Length: 223
Image (cartoon, rainbow, N blue to C red; front, side, top):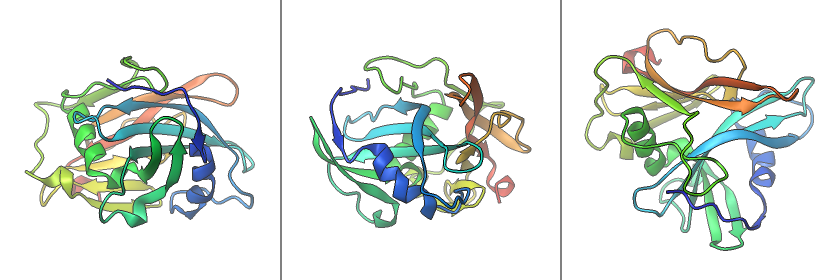
């Protein structure tokens, strides 16, 4: 189960995301640097206890109206081989020491656990509480489920696009679409989807919205 250390990080996650977000193709261009606050998310556990995984939602108030971004991240004690372009930055954790923080869709551990969540083999955890499941996060798959080609979770084809991030899970396998820009109405049915992971986040005026953080497609439906 996730252990959340109540300690410092320098720089903080939001400080690392401030220069990183404007470099992404799905970022809604603003003329000023992002003004970020954390407004939601959840965690998944690494069965080996080595990699931290967080699906964070941040609100950006830099534009004319708020924007909500979904940023899955992994936290590692050593660099992830071959993932230089996915590195968000490094930070000094008050308990664990130096951490390498990566954009989650490029990390095979996060991809494997996201598949496990959709297949009912992983339980979402609260974002800020240790040893606490988060039942508000739901994973739904139509029919009898889905199969992933052997080894596909370890080397998905990742495409970071204006409409989000797409992960193709092997030749002829299914695809995951990671929603990057969340909208209060984003819980609407996704045409051709096989399943999804849904969760909530806090709105600027104090209410809460829900949407699909991740959508599962057949490979030929996700292009």
